[in-house]
Length: 535
Image (cartoon, rainbow, N blue to C red; front, side, top):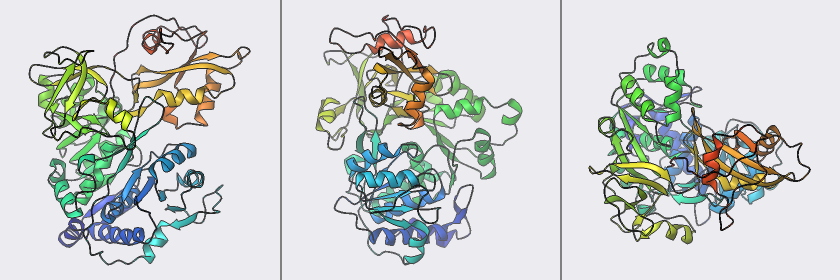
């Protein structure tokens, strides 16, 4: 059933197929583990939706779990390993996942979330017994290693339909929205058809793939398909600039997917360190997540050569535009032209009229199938994203030049992109407003030299709350939110600027954020708009 894995096991039995810092597995070992995982999943009651959630930090076991889920015809619900137990519980309830996979770093939170959400089965690896501080009452604890050892090693015989991967995309309503990757063909491909499509992708022809970002994000998650298609994969548990260079040289890495924050950290290395490593094995480095500053990308091309392929899109749409290094040098700052899966890109004015080349407006993309994008169980948000059937927006302001290249100049939403990760302000604001000493709060993006953007909170204290300082606000958030969502900076204001409709004027806040005088200074209500983007 594992098809290409079986082929690789027979043809390349001694080659390392998957490695992290703790273990290295050959193709036969990967093939056998995946077969055992399929049998193990078949033994768990998954309900009609056949969804299992995956909540773990980068490691070989996480990759193998995703491979097993793929080959079992089950849907993986991908959950960021940094989320708190209450955040995970919300996603479990929303997705209807019947079981939850977790690693040693997330096991305690996984138990708490599963109990809160009514999920009856938790599968963990890397720990003995019950996670410290967890109450196993009412939950079936399955030890990953024990269940695999007890499962048959023989190959399941049927070619199943592939279960769509479910991921959560950020919004501005305070609630993450579920989308199915490859939504237009979800559930319609057999495993054999799916693997054939994976093998036809350019990266599946190039060689060893290096994972440097969290496998809870769409870019790094590409590694699962590449391994299934027969490409060896090296997994970094956490990004390390020197470690990345060392891995590229040591394992003759051909491909990777990064975000601009990775580029900045690589470029910040001393010159003698950068010159120490031979990187000529690189063939293709994809990058996405947020717009890359022109000088940063130019410097990376000078260093690594024209190996970069930028992809622009969103979880709900997949890749909409791409641009090679050579194209980008001719059109610096562009995110490329639409891919073959889309018919066109164009900008419209406030009345929905299409604009001429070079004129900025809300960007729309046309899907020739007429399907467009869809948010699971949210027809209102789905409808709001479409100009007409098959023509959708990702909320960006920009223009299309005379050569058909898309340029992003602003965004129509308040979404924050920090280090390539989306943060929705309303969720953070909801937490802030739960503090007894906070009367009002707004969360915006501010420029950050390392992460592109960072989370910035403007807070109005309640009467008598003068003892509340920025450290206390950040500590309060850290107890309730994943670290990347917490404000890095906090300022206090006497009042928040609001428009005639009573809504907070975030454009004014963005314009004034750069001129704040300190944490106790008032924030003026000047007009203006800071430019930014999100994917």
